[in-house]
Picture 1 (cartoon, rainbow, N blue to C red):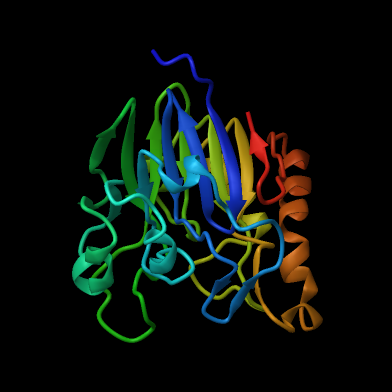
Picture 2 (picture 1 turned 135 degrees about the horizontal axis):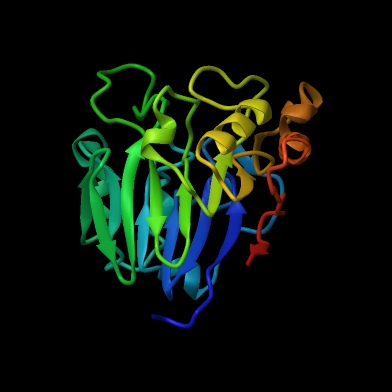
Length: 253
């Protein structure tokens, strides 16, 4: 077994670098200061050899703040990229960003290095654009190594969540968004606490908040940007759940 201890670094939004048994898993990488009309408002743009050359990338769904093609092009060419089944056909640019695209559906498992990545459902619109067929599902991923890590991607609660995900050492749960409202397919801090309890997470880190934000929106609903992480931690600890809010670029070990 690799002696490297489990650790994770939150890079901002839904981008997380997880190291388990020496295998580096990068989730939904956004490595630039801008995604369409969104600007990085906290933390540095992620960089470094661990970020640019991970052992594997997992993509939860095709929205541009999760499947960011310019960021994928910044990665080493040989890095395998795990994507929802049908994603390369729905977004042809994906075929130009890596030599190995691995398409998965819920229940599929992919061994990479010293870990196993298992795809699980997510309750979220997985399409690239709002119009068009719903042919590509949104996914979460469970990474199994020395620890069991649940990366939820972007999702709302769904009825059989605990059947797919359970006995989790660390859960990375979305608690916010990037606009003045959340809309369908998202969790606010209170619903994320419910999710943490249902998957029996021993430790939880809130993600998907307080990083990307349209210029000027902080004057409309600043609470949507600044407060979801702290609110989640407050509610989680009230329910006896070990929760830690990180700043973009900081590590949890």
